Length: 171
Image (cartoon, rainbow, N blue to C red; front, side, top):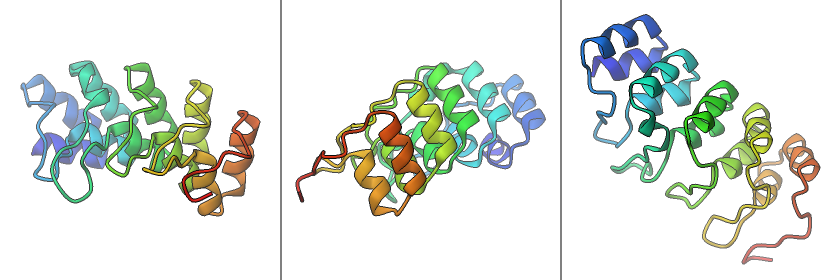
C-alpha cells in the first residue's frame, strides 16, 4: 500500500498525509508484515512514531503469513537491524522484549546474535532479561552472541549479569 511504501522508505511527511487521509495503519502484506514492521526494520523512527500515534497496539503486532515471519514483531525487526531509536519507541509504546518470534527467539537474542549493540543496549537498559530462554532448546542471548562471534555483545550481556554458565539443551 502507499502507507507501507512510505513507511519503508522513511517518508514521514507522506506517512502523515496518508494517515490523515485515513489509510489503515494495520494493513499487512501477504507475508504478514505491515507499515510498522517496515518502519522498524528500516530505522524510520519518525514514521514509526506516526504509526504508533495512530494505533499504539501496532507496537505488539506479530506478523502472520509465511516466509518465516510468523510471530515476528516490530521489536524483533528493530533489534535485529540495530535500530535503537525504534527499539526505544516500541518499548515505550508497550512492546514486550520477552515475546518470542517464530524461531522462538526474543529481541534480545536477535540483537545479541547480530551484534546489534545499540539495540541490545536499549533492550538491556529497559531491563530486558539477559538470560531469556528461547530457540526451542533453552538458548540464551549469551549463546546467540557466542554463536555469532559477537564479543562486544558478549561483554554487554555479561555486564548485564547474564549467566556465563547457562547451558541450553545441547550443553
